[in-house]
Length: 230
Image (tube, rainbow, N blue to C red; front, side):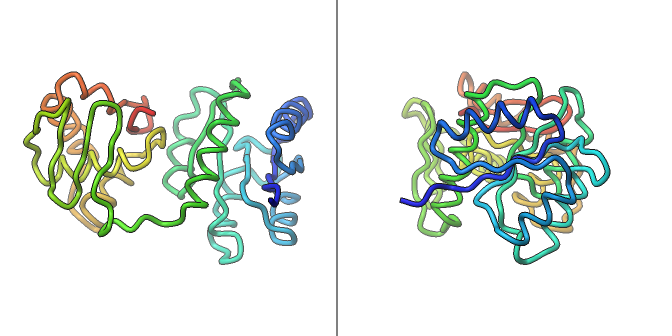
């Protein structure tokens, strides 16, 4: 079995050592670089299964690295987990809008970070979802039947609008993933649809109310967007 290769991009040596130690213990091949320029050189030359990318880098910052990767067909599909300072909501939103897969705020728990990396790699190994074939999504006490357009909470049907159903299904397919309001609009309504970010908040309020106690499964990430509880 091939060991997954992970590139850690962070200019702090202590963070590099911490991640190298913990990820190596999990069985990954780990390499570390301290600048965005070095990261792009490594990724283009060698390729990796995943990047852990600090946004606050000297010189070329993490967002610029990410933009460059996504613009290159050779590196566009590599999953990226962002490291960001607590409270840097603007950078988090920008990264997620560009297509980053997840983020962890620093200081972070190594156990949480490795768990998120395992989840990201597993989802990429499973490949893209075939939404036409998928019938049931079961999360906690909630069941979504995508072909019947049916939602059950503790076995009891819940009557949702088409938009509420699409929003819930989109979040529930990727528990733990954080989605900005703009990405939710694109996924639920399609591109170029005249829907405001405020309308997403209104839909979430209505959805939570209809789900009752299960409404707590739809979590607000302050300053960023929403996610479905893992």
